[in-house]
Length: 471
Image 1: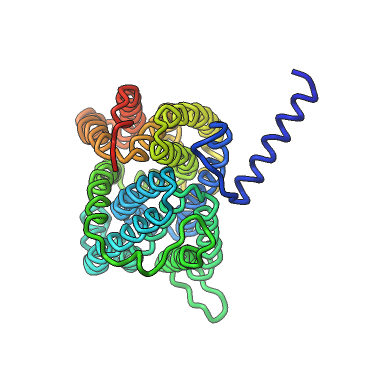
Image 2: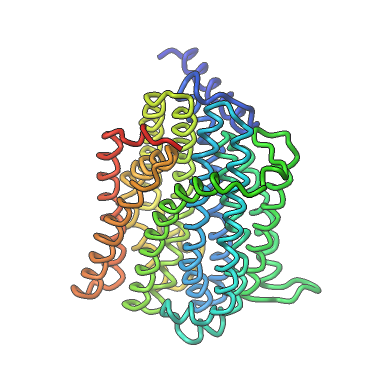
């Protein structure tokens, strides 16, 4: 390869990055698939990186408040994953429907689908917000928190649960943007939300001048306010009408047929992530039962760091969902399948790189978040064991999102049920309790289950039934 050829390739990739960050409109049903994947993947990876920053910023400041505060945040986040599951499930339906309509060149129908999904999400989330606020203490005790952790963390849990609506809307509206191929707008909203959180977190946790120190409660206040600002930004651009998706108030008039379609896609999607998040709740409970607060705190630190690196990979896999949805809408299933294969290759390479980071740099990374020797030991061990399955996880998440982008949310749901509840939880219980391996047994069950899920997903993807889904 000549020097001129290398320069041309570098320049080409550089221009692609600039185009992706500018958010230029692009027809993803035509032209180079590699270009399409890169244009979507870069802002989507940056978007998901910003989502993971929420968790890292919180755990960084809260970890300096002690092991009970750290454990409380982690246990609450384990429960909040149910809200994330609902949000991702409904946003999954919105992404699939919006992408399909955009592929059919019908932006008006895409806007109606997005608006009906927003209506549905608001109705679903109100109940969770109220129940979570009222029963905060019981939630922490049910998760196995020590009484001191309950006393210190009840207000944190109340605020986070009460703020479930902004979590829901932030995920859902970004799903609408992604389905339309407007990945840059989704990225911007999370950047803005994170900047607010980064500014508010130290101010509200530690206090400054006239602002009192709220401790761990301040972390919940900062996160909820930051996400609220991000949602306001999203709504402003949805209604301003200068994007691919242009919402009007008429789109929010209830359309029972359309809502039913959203529900039919969303319910399996919600179950898909409830199954996964429910498994994580059981794992978190097993860790605290077999290792107490030190193991729980270490596990929560590790999970935050793991999610920081996994979410960008999830962002890349979202590119596959958009490309599958739009190309199926354009009646080009083979192009949809090819886009999944290309995205899976890139994602596997990315996750291989991340696994190397965890293998060699786990200790210095963990030391940034905690100085407690026992907590650090568990965190480093968890990171290294979980990272052993990263390449498989990178492949599996692309396959799963390909199904979801096609509107086939049932297949990933069945896969998760088998992988998490039929395999991961029994294995974690066997290793941690029956064999007495404690938290280490729980850590080992995570990559083992992800590998099984990937193998099943790849087999079913190659069967091609997802190409025939009509939504």
